[in-house]
Every structure is written in structure tokens, then in C-alpha cells.
Length: 334
Length: 259
Ligand SMILES: Nc1ncnc2c1ncn2[C@@H]1O[C@H](COP(=O)(O)OP(=O)(O)OP(=O)(O)O)[C@@H](O)[C@H]1O
Ligand SMILES: [Mg+2]
Image (cartoon, rainbow over all chains, first blue to last red; front, top):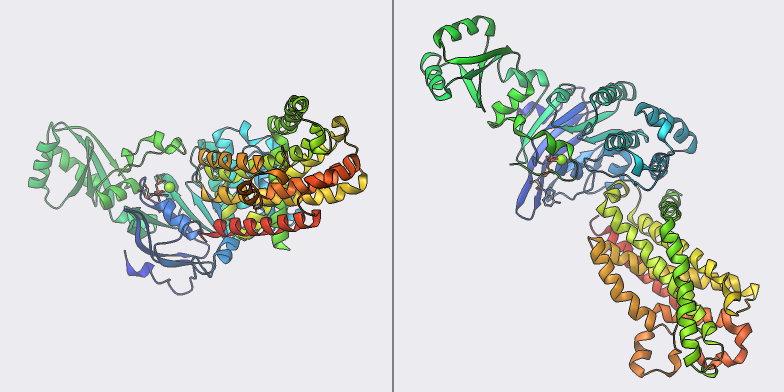
């Protein structure tokens, strides 16, 4: 991790400062002493596979878990010394369901607003605002039990926003949302950040969502493997990526090692991803050098997926899509 | 001020959940009535009227009220275990309210539900031949509230220690029956073996039943009731107050354990 990230650049104030934070569950080292800063008004993303330690870290920052060692300061309050101060400053949308499904949508919101000391007048205004945002205004007097999974998710997000927290924690906020709602939510989050100067800390599996973040922290096995802006992370991989599907991977790999020693590549299932500086001129050279060996080829810009593959040697796409959708029954892959 | 709002909010949710659950309302209202009718009529014929100072159904009636308060109050504290299983407890725990407010809100919620249940049962008093003097109702309500808080304190303590609804059920069953049978609801505790006297002298139910019995039955039974009573009602109230303070405090501590 570049040391620049440990010390905020001049003029940027760190709103979350995390130092050597560690959490062990019996034998499992879920979080292995991580340190990072999140700046004021930043949209900060935690990106990592299942079991990486994203939720554990977020729960420690939100005072729901006591760290095994290390400390963090959230909005000026220590998570071990001043939990109440932290709680007053944050909003949290959990990865797992956390609504009272016997109450109506409106009752869930009102319960939350009262616990956070939102005045009745503010509550009336804001509940309409957030419920319209997540398109549940017409369903506000319905019992949550009658809601679909996506509707519940939207209600949880509305609830997390209603007390206008200084820092908003979102643990996989778009889990189970349809593409249209997802897009809406992102528009709103970006608006909140800009207009209310809110600091947003989220976790995600979705590479395209990570692109919205100001900075991304890639985490794997409880450790930070990279922390930078999406653009700079992609630079790690090179300017262009050529993905080829060889007929015989071992033969093509041997040829690549022989002819193009300077070209780095990673293996990803049936594909090889080559990192090159000028793909447009390199592609014809590659195809001429390996006649008849390649079934298909794509030239593209690097994605965060490539970054992850580059950093960990594993592909994000190995994660079965279903594991992200069935909340509460997630199998952990390592 | 903030704490009062938090306690009220948490207690209100308990009440809301209770009234939403029609089945639970139905069961908690009809179970004690059935109990009174079936048990009372069954035993009345085989037990001599004279030894209880009053008709057996009347004798049982205050105990039935106490039992119903205890079971409703215990059953209400299960919501904490449900909240943990269904994830709602996270929403409460991450909120900027003290763990004491959370525990007190839960206790009051359960106690109010149980007390309103007891109040409802008082309306059935004429049906079992008991004429209530209106002036005893406020005092009876205080006893009911204290008894409900005492049992809610036990329930919440158990709820904050166990992880699953099954475990909660097992422990509650272990507690409910001895507390009920050693309460004096069925038979007076004045003529029982010494060990039973000792055990029941710790049982909050015994004090609740004793106090309710003198308040509710006095006009009907008159002095015939005297030999069956244990303590003055004020002493009963004092014990219940002490008992609920201790258990609610323990529940608060258990709640804030991880904090
Ligand atoms: N309460 C717990 N008890 C024991 N182990 C736990 C507990 N919570 C998490 N773990 C373990 O800690 C590790 C990190 O889990 P965590 O939930 O933080 O991962 P994550 O990055 O949020 O994954 P996902 O993408 O699946 O949500 C996993 O190996 C998990 O099994
Ligand atoms: Mg997680």
C-alpha cells in the first residue's frame, strides 16, 4: 500500500482513521491489522471477494464488533472509547436483513427516526423524500412482510438516510436490486455526497459500481492489497488488455514466453489476459506470431476485474452470481 | 430526554407488535379464562369450600391473573431473541441510545402488555362471583405492574443470555412451572412443608398472588381470608420492587456486556 494513503494530503481531512485494526473469530483471522483513511466527503469503496473481511471491518467501525486489537476514529470519535459519539455520527445499511417485518414501512422509518432524535417536522419531510426516492411512498402503510426482497432493500436504504448521518456505511447496498433501481440509487448517493457533503463508505462486489468511488480499497483475506483511485488502479494493469482464448493454452503460453518475454499475462479459466501498452499495434503482431493457435480475441481497456486478478491471481467472476443474491444463505469461498 | 424518547420508542414497538399479532392476543386472553373454568370447576367439587375462606374459583382467581401476567410478560421478552435472529437487533444496537434505555424499553413494553392483560382479566371478576371495589383497582394495578416488571426482568435477562428461540423456550419452561406451582395460586402457602415455604419465599409470584388475593377478595371473603395470607400487601409490593430492580439491572448488565 502506498504510504501516501496513510497520511492525508494537505487540505484533506480524514473523517475515518483506521489503525492496525484486527479481528479474530476464534481461529479465523477475519481482519489482519488494516490501516487506512477515508477523507471528508469521499465516496470510498471496499472491494473484495466473499469472506475478505469487508463486513467485519465495517461492523467494527460501526461499533457493533469490538476489535481484537487496533483502533479507529470515526468523525472524531474513537470506536473503542466513545461508541455513542460514533453512533450519533453514522448511518448504516447492513448486508443482512434488518427490518421489522411485522411493522409497516412507515413504522420502521419512524422507529429509526425517533431513536436518532429526528424532530417530528423533519421526519415528515424527510420520510416523504426518502420514500419517494426508493419508490415506496405508495406502499408506506403496508406491512413489510408483504414486500419483495428488493423493496425491503430499498426501505433499508431509505432508513439509513433519514437521519442525515455524517458518515454513511453501506454494506453491499445494491444487493438484490434491479438495474433501474440500482441506477436511481447511485444518482441519489452521488447527489447526497455533493449536496450534503456526506462521506460514504461502501462495500461491493460489483466492478462497475466500484467505478463510482473516489478511491477503492481492494481487500482480500483480511488484508489490504491495494488502495487508490479506480483510474490509477487500472494503470497497474497497463493501458490495454488483450483477452485471447487459445486452442491449447499450454502451447500458447510457451510461445508467449518464448517470443514476447516482456508481455505480462494472467490466466483466467479458458482465457489469457495480456497486458500491453499499445493494443492496436500489438494485436496484429500477436496474431501473426501465433497463426491458427487462437480461437477468439478481444481488445479492451482494463477493468477492475483485471486489477483484482492481477493483485490476487484469482478472478472475481469465479464468484457464483447466486451467492450474491440469496441473502442470509451465503456460502463463503476462499 | 433523549433516553426517555428511546425507552418510549422501544416500548411502543413492543406494543405495536403485540396488537398486530391477533393470534397471540386471542390466546393470552382466552387461556386464563379456560384455565379458570376448567380447573376451577373441576377442583371446586372435590375441594371443601371452608378451607379457602371463599369459593375455590374465587380463591384461584387472583392466582390466575398473576399467572397470566407472568406468562404474557415472559412471552413478550422473547422478542429480544427474535430480534437477534431476524437481524433487527443490529438496527437497535447501532443506534445512539444507551443499552440501559434499550433494556428498560423492552422491560416496560413487556410489563405494559402484561398489565393490560391483567386489567382485562379484572373485568371478568363478576363472572366468577367476585365483586371488586373500585378503590382497590389502582393498588391492584401497581401490584400487577410490579409483578409484570419482575417477570419481564427475568425474561429479559434470559433473552440477553441465550442465542436461539429454542433455548429461550427451554429455560422459560424450566422457570414458569415451579414459579407458578410454588406461588400459592392453587393452594395456600400457609400449610405447606418447610422446604416449600423457603423456596416460595424467593418467588416473586408468591408475593404477587398474596397481594392480589387480599386486594381482590377482601370484600367477598371478609375475615375468612386472613389465615391464608402471608404478608401485608405493602411488604409484597416492596419485595416485588426490589426483585424487579435487581433483575432489570442484571438484564441491563447482560445487555451491555459486549459494550
Ligand atoms: N460472527 C462470526 N463468527 C465467526 N467467524 C466469522 C463471523 N463473522 C465473520 N466471520 C468470518 O470472518 C471472515 C470475514 O467475513 P466477512 O463477513 O467480514 O466477509 P465479507 O468480506 O463481508 O464477505 P461477503 O462478501 O461474503 O459479505 C469469514 O471467513 C467469516 O467466516
Ligand atoms: Mg459482507
